[in-house]
Image 1 (cartoon, helix red, strand yellow):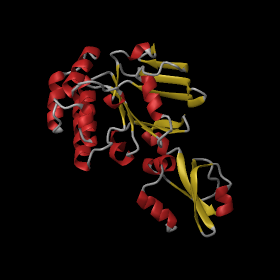
Image 2 (cartoon, one colour; image 1 turned 60 degrees about the horizontal axis):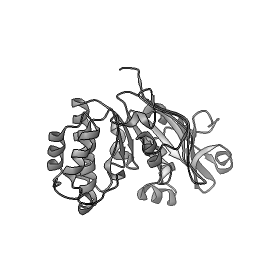
Image 3 (cartoon, one colour; image 1 turned 120 degrees about the vertical axis):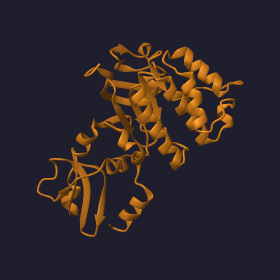
Image 4 (cartoon, one colour; image 1 turned 30 degrees about the vertical axis):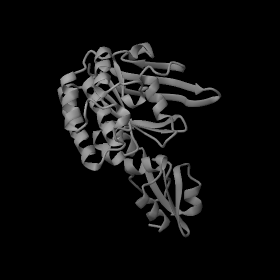
Length: 288
């Protein structure tokens, strides 16, 4: 399947009532790849994942998974983490696992039970009776055990402490060796997930503002510095950081002109979309 496309979105638009949630989205990734989807809350990431999982049929444009149109193509092929499912009645985790096994032919029940035990999550519990971290671990266990050709993980690190995050990353790498698949991971914890990413897409205001390989994306931008007026005149990504008469900003490579420039990291690009870390904000306020 080398060279084949796992998913492709062309000029996709989704509206909820009078509000446009996704606007002219274009995104694609090859089979077997891992793509990071990064953006602040409200950027449209969850809507995009719901669309790709077949849960959002009201769209215009072209949306395909493995060459077939959505939403029909998603059945048994695309798995979206179970936090997006409605929970009702007496559904326990083992009931959810059984439900997944009926929809996804590759589902490995033995592996699901093994992962739940590894994360110390009782299979007999109702999802809403679990702590946030346990619930996240449970949904990730089901997602990995489903072994769907296209697996969508929405904020997979939410509620997990640092040891659990590292454990999940190890399990994910192990699972990909056992059963290769295509992954699309929506997250704001870029530092945790970046080593996994081969491709990355940045979302803002319902649009994919940039997408590329990780290397291709970070080398497409540069941080320039110079007199405030000169830097402020450039088309920039995000904020203008000022220190007296001098300023710096991130711009697309080639827009810097004669101003001094230096490389940027994926973390820095993500900060511009989803808000800086507290320590980074402090550095900005201190003029560092």
